[in-house]
Length: 478
Ligand code: HEM
Image (cartoon, rainbow, N blue to C red):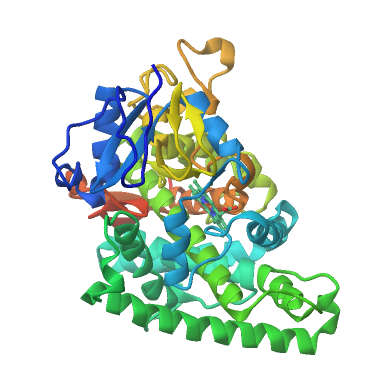
């Protein structure tokens, strides 16, 4: 049977499409905690199947967890589907309409510059700076180990990822790992929780009243703009000093400034700031939380810590603090298997949102233009029909040869970096950060969990491990 799902008021309600019963006016809002939205949606998917509907106040939302349809929708961008229009509006209001939120021609132009700034050759050239930054993280954890201090993993890893992104994409070393004062990552930390709340709010309250969190966000955005203005100034001065760089820009910021100065360029200061914010936000929480989740899973599976350790010890010189060359990072199948398993079970993007640009059909249902579609990426990757014992932490599955597997192992159901033309352009950088940090951690430290059972999943745009604290102990080498 064919049904209609509509996110706009006044259109026909969906008939025949399953979904949890809601209340008049508020729909299913009373059944959802927004910091755990993904969990409610996943539970309902188990009950109502691969396509169901819910209501956020007056808005109907379609929730999809079918592998083939998810792949098809992700691939059909930018012409058939887009990120939700309310994401673009929210990002604009937060001065953050850069590559992540842009669409059409504007997106194509920005995407080209971002992809170039993050390409493989640049990442390889960047490797020495990355190892310096990993060394700073190591010294931070050594100090914590010697002082017996609790380590807030997500916080330290966010300092690390901000330092990495600013060096690679903007050519500037802000070294938040060794700076104690207010730093850029604290301003960034204000953005995602408010963005998440606004995206899921049935009513744009912030246009009428500013809550304390909204005012705090405004202050954080002002502070970020000042930081960005200083970065742009520093890069402009660098280009003046070394005009040769104009022929072959070495990072994103150089490339976009040169494009801005070109005759007839449409690039504005606002667009530069928005993209600096996009790159930092897209690269910071995602990578930091992925590493944090991986460490959390490893502390519950010490045999896998031993296997990672054996892999690194065999790869590097005796008593080496971690990875020594870019080549070595390509030979870490165990660490890769552990991080893939972590991204399968604890993806930082457990759900993803799209909107059709035209009336369309999904799994034999009519879906009108403009309907919000939530895609449940984690639900997809943990189903037994796609991965044998889908809810089990079992990195071995990524190491087995195809003919040695007993049950399904469907790569197409594993999309932690998205898919299609808007696939994450930071994947190579993220994987390099993950490998080098895990190698350093396993080589040098025993990680002692603190209240492991108290760690929980929370979503503030990305999914992070709430209450994750550990103690580090220097590893005693045999
Ligand atoms: C483990 C770490 C990361 C994960 C899991 C991740 C995941 C994702 C996902 C799911 C998307 C949406 C893809 C889609 O729509 O199909 C995305 C987009 C994006 N990511 Fe990442 N990401 C990570 C790290 C990074 C890093 C390090 C950077 C750059 C510094 C980055 C930059 C971006 C950008 C710019 C986009 C928007 C692309 C576009 O709209 O064209 N990401 N990422």
